[in-house]
Amino acid sequence: MAAPRYHLQFRPYRRPFRQPLHTRHGIWTVREGIILCLTDADGRPAWGEIAPVPAFGSETLAQAWQLCQALPAVLTWADLQQIPLPACRFGFLSAWEQLTTSVSSVGPLPVSSVLLPTGAAALEAPQIFTPQPQSTFKWKIGVAPIQDEMAIFEELISLLPADARLRLDANGSLTWQQACQWLQLCDGYGVELLEQPLPPDQVSLMLKLRQRYSTELALDESVTTVAQLQHCYHQGWRGVFVLKAAIAGSPMELRNFCQTHNLDVIWSSVFETGVARRYIQDFLVRALPEAKRVLGFGTSHWFNDGWEQLSPEQLWERL
Ligand SMILES: [Mg+2]
Image 1 (tube, rainbow, N blue to C red):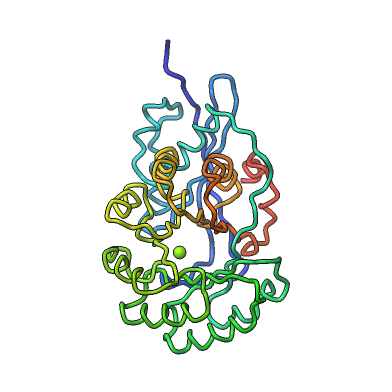
Image 2: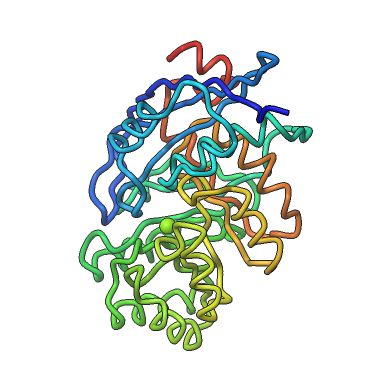
């Protein structure tokens, strides 16, 4: 019997942020990516999304576009398995899995943490004054001088509702000494966790840091791909893993590894559209029902294009 064949189409997208996002990697103003559509021999379509984040080590959009253009218009499973770039790999394999496996979508995900603007702008974010019960907020640090950020942090804590939780994300920007200063402060306030305090390659230092303070640590930039995730796990990391599935490579490998080792995970956004989001919720998040951390998908308020309400098919038609 001939191997199944899938017809490929792909289109670029561009979404300006409502306000630029400041991180230590720089200022991000527009989210760009690619939506692809695989159609099987019966004419059934499934959509996938390529949403690279080069600052996290994934391919660039230009590389992803080049890869898509170089592929034949009709693909087999063998072709799909050989796609090397991690965000592309996710996009193609997620579309393929949706074509070949049916899961029932059971509505939207539970609440996510809310990403606040960086710096003092967080103190004016409408979400902190109209919170849902037991909200989780996330705030980026490591962008301005540490004393300035600590002063804003204390003010932010005083504004947050008593039942709110706070996550800090340093995006790998701190020195050992600064990380200790932050963790000491965090311990006093019961901060939920500090994400990626040290640069991605300093995992053994973060293992040490994790033993010194009660605030939990999460790896993010250190575990961008499935291979890095496996490496850090085998180095002994048992803290939190922030998983950005859209840039991790094969979603099946990612799911298998998480299930096998029962990891403490936070599923997290790379500002992907609903195309990748729906797949992640139905095929990954719901496959690990015991994961207890609040999700990191609270980013829809960063856009005002109404795309969040569109089905994959509707979005495809607009591109
Ligand atoms: Mg992070």
